[in-house]
Image 1 (tube, rainbow, N blue to C red):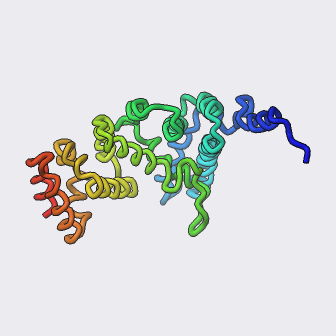
Image 2 (cartoon, rainbow, N blue to C red):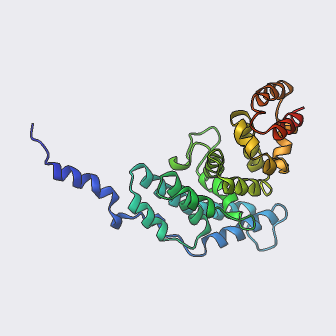
Image 3 (cartoon, rainbow, N blue to C red):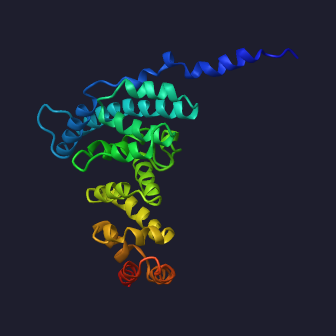
Length: 268
């Protein structure tokens, strides 16, 4: 059998990552997110009624879906680059739409998940509480091609639960490594989360209390005054789960006696 020269093999592998092959999906229209915001506002006021001469709710939904599909292709381009380890091309893709808020958030997450940026950069660049609309939009965009009971269509890099879950999960992972700024960002975000987002964060906080007692006790002063945390402790654990947690935390009271006793009291 004739062997293929090693140089040709290496060149073939390099072609998919060539910078000049950056996906056209990476270049987003400069006003795309503004258009999306207007359409969402129109959709909210169109049900019911529709103003005379205005678009119907279905027409608005169709335009909103078209916008989200552009963002979805951007996410897929980053996801494809991640799967192929095309780090240079991924960064080149991000550089083509630097002003778009959804693209910025998606790129920050993609670069961090692929270890192309540091934990410090990831935390410091996390959106402030007054600029969260793009963050709330990420999951809707990532699921734009999904259908009920159909296959998972999320871009693989942000699956299986979507980019919002990935963002908050990564923040909490850093909290377990004693990153105080990550905890501050997480708790600030929880104050603005509603609906599905709040429920997702409640589940994560439950897991934190169950799996990381030492982290909880080390950060109890910051945790105990947060509404999401107090709600989880009061309502999200069953009586049996609370009993088991009280027993677990008893074994950690040597770390911080006063914090430990407060946690135990909160679980009654």
